[in-house]
Every structure is written in C-alpha cells, then in structure tokens.
Length: 318
Image (tube, rainbow, N blue to C red):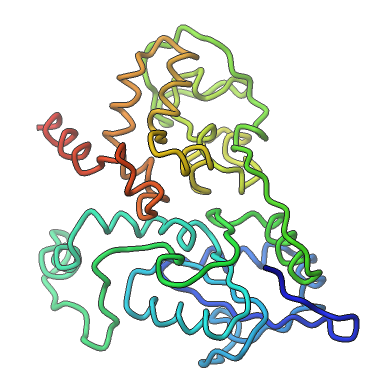
C-alpha cells in the first residue's frame, strides 16, 4: 500500500507517535543530516511528540509509530494513529518485534512494580506509581498485535540510509526497497575453520580485525540477523547483537531458532561442540533474544523455552 499523490499536490502529511521505547528511532531521523531537507520539502509534519506540541491526531497520509505496546496508553495512542493515518509504519525493532521491553513478559506486572518501587534493594521503599500513570498491560506486544501495520522498518534504530529510502519511496508513491540479506552479507570479515575450542566473551582478548567472530569463538548474531543496519558493529570490531531482528528464515520456519542457527555455523568454524554453544546462548537468552522475544514469531515457537533455559542457568549457578 502506498500513498497516492498528484503532480499538483506533492505534499505528504506525517504523524508520528512514540510508545514504549528509548526515543532513538525518532532521533535517527535527524541522522539524515542534510538529506532531511529533501524529505521536508515534500512532507508536512503534524503530530510528532519530539518536534511539535500537537496533542490530537490530525488526518495524515503516513504515520510512523515507534515502541512496543507496554501500557494502556500505548494501546490507545496506537489505535488513534491507525484511525488518523492512511498508512502505518512500525518504526524500529520495538514496534516490529516488541524490542527490549519484551523481557517484561518473563515477569508478572505486579512483580515488576515490586522490584522497581517497593522491594528494590538499591533504593528506599517507595509507593507504586500514581493511579494517573497508565497501567502496564499483562504482556508486551509488537505494534501489529494491536493495530494493522502496512510497512515494517526494524532496526535499533533504523539506518539513516534506509530511512531516507523508505520516506522518499512513500513520497514518490512506490514500494520501498528492502532485502532479506543478513548482516553477514555486508560484513567483510572472512569465515575460516580454526582450532578455537572455547567460547570467548567480548571482554576477553582483542579480536582479529579480518577474521569472522564465530571463527574466533565470539558469539555474533550477524548470520541470523536481518541487515537493517549496514553492518556497522562487526565492521568496527563489535559482534552483532541482533538488534534488527532475526532473518526471515528463522522467523518463518517453526523449527529454526536463533541459537541453533548460530550454533551450527560456529561449530563448523571452530572445535567448539555445538551443544556447548547452544547452552551458552540459552544461559544468556535475555541478551541474545532481547529484541525479539515478544513477537509471536519467536516467542510462540516450540523451540523457544526461555523460562526453562533461565531456570537451568540459575540451577547451574547455584
């Protein structure tokens, strides 16, 4: 679905909303730098919390929504955006997959409030939030669990190049270009078989600049992560954390999983047993699944047993 324009009216109206997230996706628009001027020539910004003080939701051609559905306010704001906008973009990994707020699904809302306000060991006991504060919903969900979404733009935050392409395409009335390649597709590191026999953490040693992280024993999510970032982390010495979400192969096939995809590749490239790699990813599942656990495409897989993994890790620690 694309907004239609005519030669006499090229102005697209834009609403934006910011739900439960860190604001980074909205700030990423500023990273367009001078290209933002080209966008603004054809876009009239209306409801946009970080830029305007418009409280209501005027009719708009395009609506961009960042953040997960975490509170009742989030749900109401998302529904208001859907009602006012011809086209809705899920903007960033929190809107697309539920993002890091999804870790809240491992705990009951009342337990979270106790941990933050009344039983926090690092602060004085304090009453819970005012009744005027929107209550937490029972579970965190991606945007499309509450409203219909027309276009998905994952990333933490989406890369400025992809933002410019998407907005320009919509202004021009065409479908934005999006590939299904993984982060590995753009990474220039070389995969090669090594005799590495143990898993290393990023704080352990200085990785070789030219060699694939998996070959060196460092867990890198790049081969199971969509390229919506232009591969900056592995190109600059940091293993991919999977912030743009899993590849379509992982998302759409019920028996494929992030941990097994990574473990199979890493086991072939090193002397580390596959089972040891799987166990390490399970032990730190909150980190490796932090962006995607709230989406049904991951959270409802028969292979996704995060509560059991965390219980096993706690038992091993004890």
